[in-house]
Length: 210
Image (cartoon, rainbow, N blue to C red; front, side):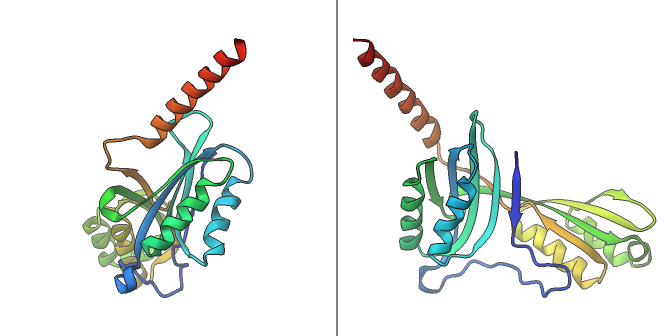
């Protein structure tokens, strides 16, 4: 099962593009959490942020590359001292296997967005199709009532197309997948952790047989 959540502005609200915050050491962090695929883990994870009064900018939950293990990718603005505490609290959760935090230069991120726009305005206003081309959007469906545009890229890129279409007053719906991220590190901490756990389990079984 895959769950996607995001904090994209609703159509009709004022668009505010997210920018890195520099005051008091506050900046955007990406937190990656791996857990057992069990009910209630999502609520347990998000409660850690709630208790710290941290707003989750985006949340993406999906299967990981390991069987029965889910991956949570969360972004939030805070300072490093606070994010260290958050990660420590996450790792204390029984069903959480690993948790780590990363700055923007330590991860490769990607976002996917869908835009539903009015076909009549798409046809009559050339600026709309021009904006879609300039932002590398793709029209994936079109009928007499609406057209659906797909865009993949950095979060600021999908947001830029949103702002342009919003300004053209043609946007009916907008949704973002939330940030997905992979680390740029040469190490794979989860794989190392699972290997160590497997070795410990084998050693325990050996002792039990003695």
